[in-house]
Structure formats: C-alpha cells, structure tokens
Length: 110
Image (cartoon, rainbow, N blue to C red; front, side, top):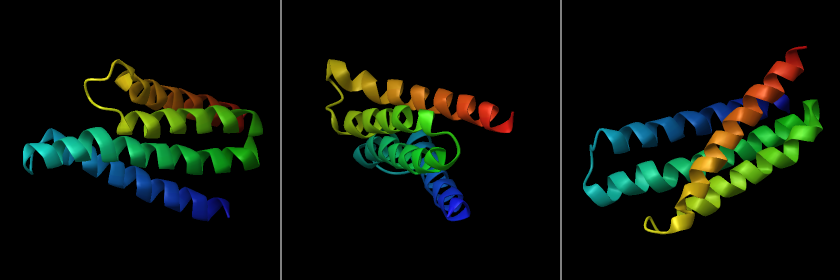
C-alpha cells in the first residue's frame, strides 16, 4: 500500500510541477496559464498532501492531521478569487505542507 501511495504522490507532484512550469513560461493564453499555475497547481499539491497524509498515518500519525489541514488550505485557496485578501491561504498551506513533510521525514529516519 505504501508503495502505491508513494507512486501516486510522485505522479501528482510531477503533474503539479508541469502545471506551474507551463504557467510560468506562458505557453498558453493568459487565462489558461493562470488556471494552470494559480489554481490547478494548488489543487494538485493539496491532493498530493492528502496522499502524503495517508502515508504519514502509517509511519507518524501525529503529522497526519496537520498535513490534511495544509492540503485543505491549498485546495480552498485555489478556488478563492485572486483579488481576495484570503488568497494567501493557499501559499500558507503550501509552505506548511512542505515544512511538515521535511519534519516528518527527518523524524522517520531517526
């Protein structure tokens, strides 16, 4: 099960990076680039954090719910209007998920 989750997370993360790169290099018209880099990227990262939260349940359950919270912030933030003052929550979710990921990995190795 863990290998399947790792494979799924890897594929989702690669898709997210592709979305971000396509948006940065402006390969498509403006609306599509915005959708890929500011919406779909955060949705995919949120899904990746959910999958990682499932893996943390197996190895270090105390990080599972914070990872789910980070995923929720990413996904909810992706649907907020760009002019919203709450739009920053997707970035907070992204940073939180990355920090949780690094902390949980370092504790898993010890």
